[in-house]
Length: 75
Image (cartoon, rainbow, N blue to C red; front, side):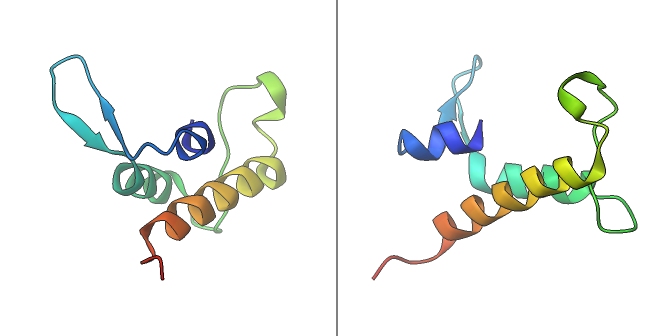
């Protein structure tokens, strides 16, 4: 979702109750809370190999890279 919203140039997504949500900040916070003590990420959902820590950690790092790049000031 982060990649799609970045491609669309959106940082806020209007939610049902009408407030915008800061996607970059919320995405970073959510990912960091899900990180395992060994530094990896996994998803208990077995479809699409999401229990593979190498694959899921790669996705998480790419997402953090996108979110971090968006937070940097553009010169």
